Image (tube, rainbow, N blue to C red; front, side):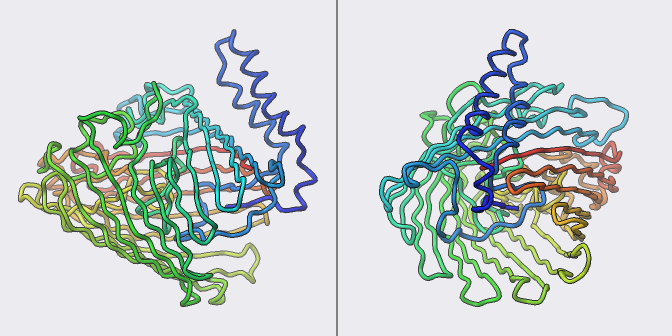
Length: 516
């Protein structure tokens, strides 16, 4: 959604309301500590936050991001002081989830992953810009998981887990908006985030310790060059990045790239990119925090071997506002190099098109798409054909149940979206999935977890994995506050019943978020 406050909203916001938000959270902590209910202060904080007008709301059905954010004049921020030199931002999000059979697809077993739980995320940041060419930014984040049957260990049994207040971002930016260097802990997001994104549905999100050069070549064209290493979540201590944690047994992963975007060929935006990933060894030395760690590799690889490969790709996206409601898009990526000592050669593509009925009641939008990503048809031949999904925001692309990534799939999909009211959006999204080859795995959204081991039964199974239907309601009463509720049902395919339990799965959630 990406909504931001405008000047008319400023009358609703005052400094004492901001103080009220912080006061409610502090009072709740002080009052409930003796009751061992400290974390319930999140609810009070969210209620107080409703009093504020805010910006940056984005949910499961969020608008796809531009390739590179061309710098624009900042909008009015009620939490800016000293003539805009010092500005604060804040986000509070609560989400209740319930999942059934999302991991085992087995009605006969009541496993720990058949669970319901409450997720909380609180972020607060401050930006200081003493002069036009210098900016300092720091952002802290506190994330919690409540009432779950699973251990509160990030990644264990699919858990979000806990990560007490830690540094999410902290960087220095040198240079004017047209060209600048940003160094430090920061978020990286390019294109639609199919390969590089912030993974913001996840309670932690994703950041990198990185150096990034940004050049605006014209009003419609820009290029970024970056070198980075991903930050790994550690619930017990300060979150450190993969390269700079001082652990000689770690992967020492370095992720770099060049990303160019241009709007010179209106009504389309064209992107071209080259991305490189190099890591000294595999993932075995880093279990905790593995939600953000690629690549999946192949059954024939060794965690002791080096991974070093390149991704070359292009993306095109048309603007429906300039095409009378029609829209189309595509992305194509090719990979070559080595993964865990195996020779990598892989390909992925996305194509889609639709129409926006902007002159009709409820403004219906219909959009059809097809996603493909190669798999490895022989895990014993010394080659790897599995497309590596890098650091994506997969939640918004392959079903909201997070059962699939951009790896080893054929995925046709159809989306229908309507607006019964200017503040209410209803979305029905259907995805069907086939594995490209059953000699490779079915990979979940994190790109690591595999739904079934590669047993003889799995390799001989039918390749139809199933169909997911997602129903989502998004209600935004004011620009700073949004609610979302969703229900998803996965109709299990023959691959599951041929390789083990094959029962349907369900997922439901309600979420509230305020951001300014």
